[in-house]
Amino acid sequence: MELYKHQNIKIYNTLTGEKDNFKPITEGYIGMYVCGPTVYSNVHLGNVRTFMSFDVIFRYLKHLGYKVRYVRNITDAGHLENDADVGEDKITKKARLEEIEPMEVVQRYTVDFHNILNTFNFLPPSIEPTATGHIIEQIELIKTIIDNGFAYVVNGSVYFDVHKYNKTNNYGILSKRKLEDLIHNTRELDGQSDKKNPQDFALWKKAEPTHIMRWPSPWSDGFPGWHLECTAMSTKYLGDHFDIHGGGMDLKFPHHECEIAQNQAAKGKTPVNYWMHANMLELNGQRMSKSTGNTVNPDELLSGNNAFFSKAYTPSVIRFFVAQSSYRSILDLTDDGLLASEKGYNRLMEGVNQLDNLKTSKTSSLDIDSWKQKCYAAMNDDFNTPIAIANLFEGVKYINQIKEGTETISDKDLETFKTTFNAFVFDILGLKNDKTNTASGTDKLSGAVQLLIKLRQEARANKDFALSDQIRDELAEAGIQLNDGREGTTFSTN
Image (tube, rainbow, N blue to C red; front, side, top):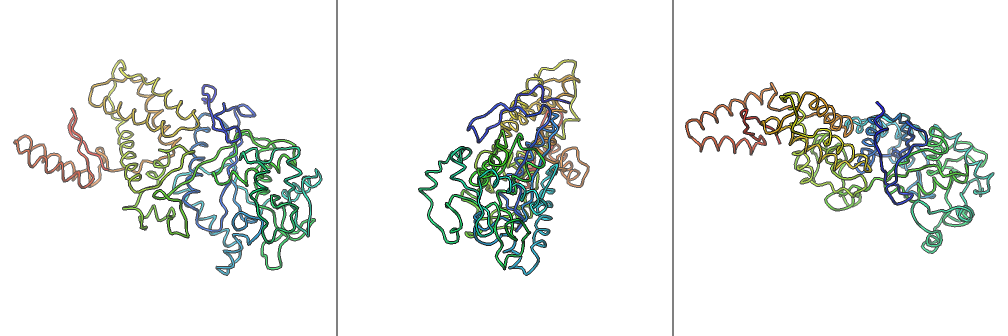
């Protein structure tokens, strides 16, 4: 279904600093590129948050009926320490430490990356290119930039001439930085003597004798610059001009700024209409940092084997936690926040599990069409998942009201309600129903709780309210909430 024809999406565009009306270059088709991981270590939880945000965006665009080509790369060469043009390649450095081949490092951590994303129920991208698989394209791109006069060769390395580029273009158009300020705030660093100016960046680096990962080129045996890789891969699969480019906020400068400059220098056009940036993830109000120990990896969060959290959390609870904040907001990961999200997630799944048990009437007292439009309006407003979730909880309230008989719903409206509710919970937010211990369950827990509910009912009939309250309170302490309604008592787990 082409639902997109009836929706007006607004996207916060870093390039303009405003929420822009979204209009694809080709109607019904979207090209989206997101900068993937550098696979030299286990995937960082902050990166998972970024990729999770774009997974939801990908899911929503597909739900609307767009044909989306989603390209998310793997950086397996050329990303030097401190995101600079000097120092050692991050992957090569890890290979030296572990005394293995660089491609063993790449394989190990690429597998880890995929395993973690599968655990969190990510949809795979349409294409997942690697930097080492596109060396030829990068060399050809460098040749074009040199021929157009925006790069120079020194001692076998090739550098992009930022100052010359800025005479006819705007280096800083994305990050809103001025070259004059960058010059003023830059101090000369050792090892940058080959550059005309400190602001210039490497397109190709001549490999030192000890550098393991190297390829032949017209200029030297060497390796490509980190910024160049994404320009080559994105334009190869999405064209010289495409719809959406995403990534973490930390990539806005210099990585994405350099991508724009490279494309403009090579093709004479800006590469992307809408630049999107996901914000940072903090841990207990502070920046995550390996050096300070204020960090937790996804496996530790899922297993509960860490010093920060009181228990293990399921992948869907963590997804739900992330979705409760805008992708553009700084997200603070705390135990209290996850515990609250777990309760909210359980409430949502309780609602899902009741959908098939709702009784219908000839007419509806609820305006389901209006509720449905509010759900779509939230996602159309720069993919506002917190408001979408608030609308889903309004739907849970409707479910309880229908159950209790205070509101009615027709067969037609119930079908619309169920379809929309399930689509947003599962297809768009990407949650799974991990909550199996519900009132309708047939497992041992359900049987035991039902026995206690029966004993509590007998105690109330005998006016033994002390025993009735004791059963209710002790179950609550164990994380089992009794819900008294017109049709009897049900339970939910927290």
